[in-house]
Amino acid sequence: MEPITEILASGLIAWLASIAAWTGYLLVSGKIRLLEMLAKDCNERSVICPERVASLMATLFVAGYLISLCCSLDITPDPETKLITMPDIPESLLVLLATSKSFYLTGKFIR
Image 1 (cartoon, rainbow, N blue to C red):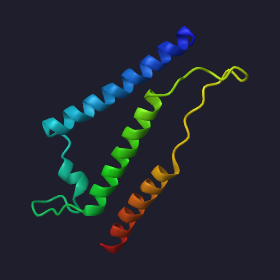
Image 2 (cartoon, rainbow, N blue to C red; image 1 turned 120 degrees about the horizontal axis):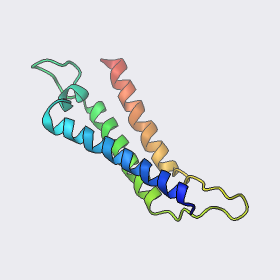
Image 3 (cartoon, rainbow, N blue to C red; image 1 turned 180 degrees about the vertical axis):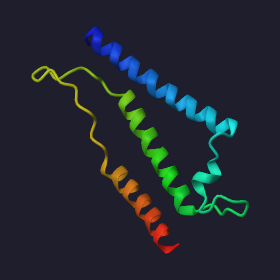
């Protein structure tokens, strides 16, 4: 891999890691309240909506799977085209995302 590609890849990984660390810090410090993301109403009697929890968990699972998939790939370019391609997303993950988002939207319409 060329040096500029390695620098850009390292910079992208560092940027994504810093965003994840900052978001984690804000969640732990209480500046981002997780209850407000998962509840229907943001007051003292908030009820956590199961469709929001399912949507969040599915999104985190798919993101983690794709990150681990990308980290385990061999990123040598194709000799003919000199391009590096993204991995194919498994159909089961697309079904999982579509199902969780459908569950979320159905819950929004019902309430």
